[in-house]
Amino acid sequence: MFREDLKKLLQSFREEDFYKNVDLHIHSYESDGSLSPVEIVKQAKERGLKYISITDHNTIEAYLSTNILKEDIVIPAVEFDCFYKGNLLHILGYGIDIDSEVLKPLYAKNKAERSRNIVRLFHLRKPEEVIEKIKEAGGIPVWAHPACCWTLSLEEMLLDLKVRGLEGIEVYYPYNGLRGILKFYSKEHINELADKYDLIKTGGTDSHGKKLLF
Ligand SMILES: [Zn+2]
Ligand SMILES: [Zn+2]
Image (cartoon, rainbow, N blue to C red):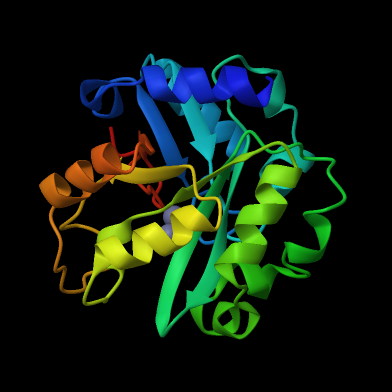
């Protein structure tokens, strides 16, 4: 799918879609999830989902090692670990060309780099580099689960990332269930910021387990 078409598709999703038939944030066993990519697609189809993305940490192995991109419901994606002004943050790239050379240096070199939290800490990228490369690879950069960041001003951080090319923000996801850390920002706040700065709103369950969280 072309970048502009994907952009329109992402913009067409509404909040209710993300709780019903679209899940753009799922991990497979190629990073720290439990299911195989093929099993994820199977479960998604059984549940009648219209669109899904497997967003493994620092790897697109789910797409390279299977034929799941042949399925109409699958949008290719990846989730990169970044470090920015004292914050760990995750940037999702949707619709990237999985053969793109520009992203290859950013991918994990081995299984530990894409699954173990502690190892991943040593391979943090700068968000501006990640955002730029995602776009060069034809993808759309989106800030994942922003309320997980501990920052005094999420708005300032967002503005800074937008200046660096960020195009979307994950608004619809399980705020309380995620990562078990204290959150300072609500969905309503993130939603307002997304409107204010004209960002694409995405969502997903961040499923890691044996069943999709729908
Ligand atoms: Zn994440
Ligand atoms: Zn994730």
